[in-house]
Image (cartoon, rainbow, N blue to C red; front, top):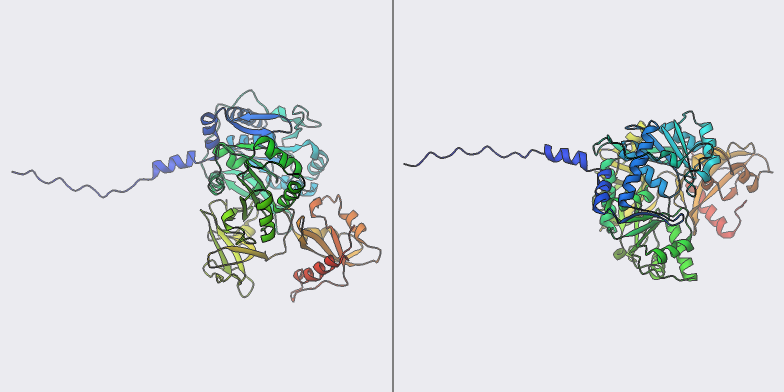
Length: 557
């Protein structure tokens, strides 16, 4: 007699809770660096040739633990800000990793900011600790005097003498006796880094990034270069930029187990010498850096055989430039496009050149990128309504990316306007073709990108209009071979004695205007073109200003 059939098992339902717990606790940047501290304990992690200092992964992990102890002793806790106004160097890396180990938020700040702009960041992020480079002391002191917020600890960083503190604590004061025993374990969703970019009025606005964004940004670079533990990279652009820290900088390098080489300030000859001397495999910078590298290499060739590639961001490469760089520097030239809020979202690979030179490439592996149709009323478009993929119709670039933290600091209205339904609306105008190669043609607003730095016209105009001899001003960018765009002011004078030198002296050293935002040329006009609603029509000034530049009639200080 047969036994009764066993009852059918209940339908299987996967329980994701165990996976979710591991992901939230271990899919963090700090966990990745910790793995390398024992996996690649004796491999080089960080090299500062200027001072002769070098760290293995084991040493880097130990020293970031000591800095974490020093930060905690200063009162830094979970979620507290640590503002760092530093050049590329070991102290930047130590503070950035230590803050994350402590559960704090690292806030790298542009060292070119004017004192009033830095004061804005201090009041906006309210750091417990503010660390600045010794070379920036006068501007940093001015910023501290202007800020309403008073950090609990101010650290003076002197790379040549870490024990020197000036009026403030030296960096060595942050080095505790050892790693605290009870460092927190935070989830992948907590804020880890806050980077600042230009706001709608030109004042910096904070962009929040979380632990998962850190890891996914690193993964993106590791995939696209690709980057391996055997690589040795050097950024020609500052680490305070999203495109510096994350594009081949400390973020992906320390996560994959490669070596980061610090370059305090870009110099074409020194950069090429470092490639030959240290066997660098990747250089990362702006198109302006590549132009200067090519000129230097043509003048005094070096052996660049170790290079696996040069990666550039900030502006597209035209066909002639791409061919020149491939011939003179390396065949492997890459170009990434994106913004502080989203990192890079399209990528142009060596195989795309020279046929697609001038474009920004196609969407990165994990990203959705769309050129959306412009709304007839000038309002926001929708990712559901795309511009035709014909290579000619202009629309706005929108991107949906896991490399974005989807947040601004203290800017709820702008956050709601720019981040909508999972998409970031960039404000960049572009076309795309049938293969989805995106070509940037301009901006909906009038942001200028000069030497890889954003310059907002409204801020510069406000400074110019403070001068009693200026009735009105409009600031635009015109093409420039060296800087990408040159900042030019079109000025309506109130008195005939106002000239380029007078206005340059007014702008130079202004506490609310970084020097790189200062106009380098002037055009004096009887009136400014206006829209029907009374706004400055800056786009109407570009063509005649470019013509005057070609004729050599622009006024220069």
